[in-house]
Image (cartoon, rainbow, N blue to C red; front, side):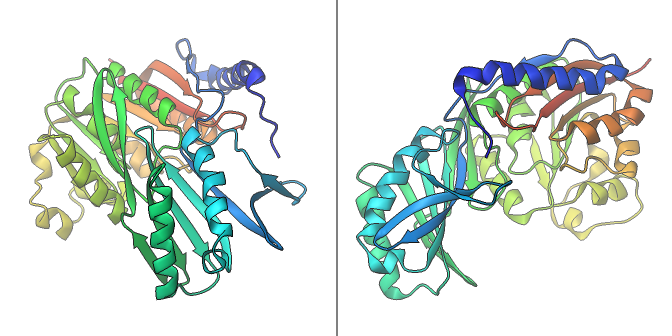
Length: 366
């Protein structure tokens, strides 16, 4: 189990920054901009196994090295909301043999805006009686929390009453709203996410024309960046994320953002005219009407594939957010041949771990 000590937070961040500088020194980047996290209560998502011990019931996690179970009464990384709901939920579950029977996991999704979604996972099917007691549980917890509950079993999902939360982020003095659906990707560290969005806004403030974003998820970045561009074209392969993005576009009153359900590889094929996609026709989107001088990419840990790297190199400005310094370094081997690194950032999304979130802003060489 990783030791987490808020008193030592700064030293672990300094170590990350030193590692980041060492990995990328071969590219001679500008001074590293380091964006810190709160030292505790920073994580908006958490999941715990549930351990049954006679009449007792409590949360556990497993040590990755020793495989030993560890009882969790307080979870330092978890948001204050998560830490407040955890004991309250256990108290109510203990009162109900039906709600606790075969319960093996609880997932929490919280927001900076004060909303909570709790998913209860079972090794049995959920009956009408379970639904009745779960509704009573929700009503009881709603006295203290803005909460919705989901029950899950094999091939079964019961939603009481919503399967999403609505987050509110303050970005450069503006309030942005985001629908976040259970089991869909969202940025886990809300405070650092706000800093990432503000950094991206700042580096693109002098860009002209339109923006293309690949891997846009629920529109986290594209919604924040839309005011900096005439039009924004964003792609995402996950259907649920695209649906959330459409909700978020409407909720934030944007009229210059278009979301397409395409993978990065499919978009590369489409923009090169190698194949027509019915999804483009159905959405009535003509790619030739966009004048995208800037591209934003936030790829999965594997980074950009070779064809996408070549496509990205055609743009004047590149904003690259990465969750893997190693694959980012690999991609920069090619990108730095055609572009200069103008800005270089570290975002501490995951304190007390080896994980590093990076930001690089590149402009095409003369």
